[in-house]
Image (cartoon, rainbow, N blue to C red; front, top):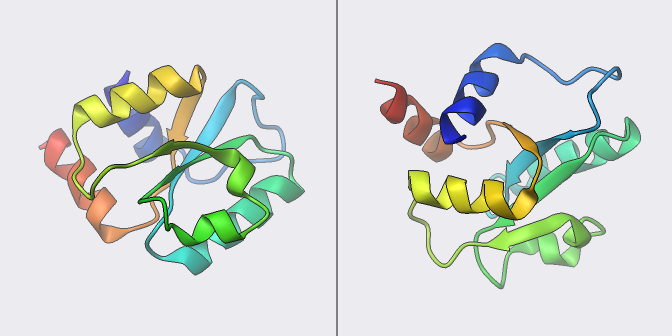
Amino acid sequence: MVYDIIIQMMNINMIKKSHIPEKAALLFSGHNQRSIVALCRYFSSIRQLFVIVTSSQTDPIYKTDYKSSVIFEREDCSLSVSLFEKISQIAQKELVYCPTSEYLNNFFWNILK
C-alpha cells in the first residue's frame, strides 16, 4: 500500500478537476506551512478530498480552518514505512502523496533506490 502511494507520487503531476472522489491528497504539515495552507485552499476550491498529518500537538495547522482535515498526529519527526501503513489504515482511502518538503521527498526516493 505504501509503495502504491510512492508510485502515484511519481505518476501524477497535478490533481485535475475531474478527480476521483475516493482518492485523498496526503499532506504532511509542520514544515513549509505556507505551501500546506495554499494546497489546502486549492484542494478545497476544487472539492478535492485531502487529509493532513501533523508534526505535533503544536502544529500551526491547528490554528487554521483546515484543522478538521487532520487524521494523524506524529509523535516525532521520524519517517518509516510502518508510519505510512498506519496513516493508510486510518484514512481508509487511496492516498496520493503531495511532495511538500525536501525531507519527505528524500525519504521516498531512498525507499525507491
